[in-house]
Image 1 (tube, rainbow over the protein chains, first blue to last red):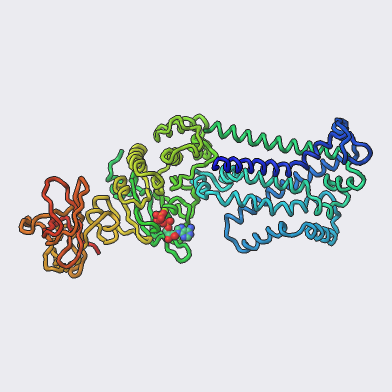
Image 2 (cartoon, chains in turn red, cyan):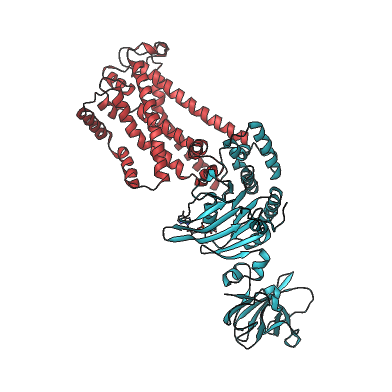
Length: 267
Length: 367
Ligand SMILES: Nc1ncnc2c1ncn2[C@@H]1O[C@H](COP(=O)(O)OP(=O)(O)OP(=O)(O)O)[C@@H](O)[C@H]1O
Ligand SMILES: [Mg+2]
C-alpha cells in the first residue's frame, strides 16, 4: 500500500511537472513552428505545410530587421548605463549610513510599483514640457530609469551576503580603495552585476508601454510587431523570435556548462 | 634569534618598540570599547591580548591595523606615528578571525596578493609563495580555492598570506577560534614555531586563557576596555593582583582577611602568612587567594609547621584520574577547592575533618 502511494505521489509530480512545462512552453513552440509555416495571404494563424522560405527571406520584410537592431541598441545602452549607476547606488545603500538613505531606498522602489502607463505618460509630459523631441534618446532615458530600480535590487541582494572583512583583508595587503574594489569587491559581486545587466536588457528589449509613449518616430521590435499585428504579422517575426529564443537558451546552456566544468576543475 | 629579554633591553637603549599605544580610547556611540589604553610591545614578542567577550580586544587590534580610528590617543609602530594612516600604509598584516580568504582566488593568488600589490616581479612572487607554502606546510595546495580547504588549512593560508609580506608586526584576531580542540592545540604549537622562525612580533587576541598561557611570552589581561594586568604567564598566574584576573586565569580560592603587616587573620581567627615579596600594601580588609593545586590536605593534627593551614570539612570528593578534586567547607561556611595529585592512596572521605595547607609564598593578595 505504501509503495503504491509512493508511486502515485511520484507519478503525480511527474504529470504535474509535464503539465506545467507544457503550459509554459506551448506558446514558444507555436511561435517556432509557425516560422516554418507555408502561410497564404497576410495572416499566419493556420498550418499550411512546412517551408524554409521565411528563414531564407528573413531580412526581406522592410523595417523589421531595423526595428530589431534598434531594440538591441536600446536594450544594450540602457542596461549598461543602468547597471553602472545601479551598482554604485546599491554599494552606497548597503555600505554607508547617510542622510536620506531610507528615502532613497523608497524612491528606488517607486518605478517598480508605478503602473507603466503612468510612468510612460508622465515621462512624455516631462519631455514635452522641456520640449525635448522624443525618439531614440528619450526611449533610452526612459529605459535606464526603470532598469535602475531592478539593478539596485539585484545587486543589493548580492552585496548583503558580502563579508566586509574581505575588503579589509585586501586593504591590509596594500590594496588601496580602488584596487580593493577592482580586485575583490567587483569580482565577488560580478555574478549579481551580470544578472542585473541581463535583467535590464530583457526588460528593455520587450518593453512596449513606456516605449510607445516616448518613441517619437523610432520603431522598436515590440512597436513593429504591434503595428504589424493589425495588418498581419509576417512569419519573419516568428523567425526572429525563434532565433532570439534559441540563441538565449544556447548562451544559458553554455554558461551552465562552463560553470560546471570550472567547478569540476577545482574540485 | 634574540632571547626574550630583548624587548626590555631595546627600551633601555632607546630602540623603538614594535607597537606603542598611548592613551588610546575608542567609543561606539555610548559604548566605550577601549578606554584609555597605554601599551608597549617590544620586538620579537609573542604578545597576547586576553579577556572576556566584549572587553575590547578586537577593537584594540583593529586600531593597530588601521581599520578603526581611535577617538583619542596615538599609535606608533617602530617609533613612527601611524594614527590616522590607512591599513595599506601600515607595516603590519592581519590574520582575521574568519580568515577572510578571497574566495574567487586560489591559494597561490591569495598568498601572492600583497606581493602583487607591491609590484614584485612575477618570478620572485612564485619563489616566495613557494617558500611560504612550505613554511605553513601547504605544499601542493596552491591551485585549490579556499572553499576546498579544511579549517586548519584555511588558517594556514591566512597566515601565509600575511607573513609573506614580511610585516614587522603580525596581528592575529582569535586565529584558532574556529578550529576544534585537537587542531587548535596543534596550531598553537605551529604558530609558536613559525613565530620563532620568522622572528617578528605577534599580537594575538584570544579569550582562551590556556591558549594565551601556552603561546605568549607577555599577556595583557583586558576587562571592560582597560588592561587589568600585564606580565609573563607565570607572573600573572601566580600573582593576579585582582579578583577578576585571578578568576579569569583558572580557578582560585579567595578568602576575606584582616591584614596586619605580613600576616592576615581569617574570620575564624586563623593566621595566614603572606609572601615576603610584594607584601607591601595597606593594612585592613583584604582578599587573599590560593590556587587549588597549591594546596594539600592533611589530617588536622598533621599540618606541617611553617605552612599556612585552614581547618575544613570535606564536602565532596571527585576522582578525575590524574588528580582528585576536593570540595571543602570552612567553619565560617566558605567553599574551597583543592586539587591533589594521585601520588599515594591517602584519601579523605566526605565528612572528614582536614587541614588544607600551603606555603606562604603561594598566597596572593587581590584588590
Ligand atoms: N562597529 C561597532 N559598532 C558598535 N559597537 C561596537 C562595534 N565594534 C565593537 N563594538 C562594541 O565594543 C565593545 C568591544 O568590542 P570588541 O569587538 O573589541 O570585543 P572583543 O573583546 O573582541 O570581544 P569578542 O571576544 O567577543 O570578540 C563591545 O561592547 C562591542 O559591542
Ligand atoms: Mg573579538
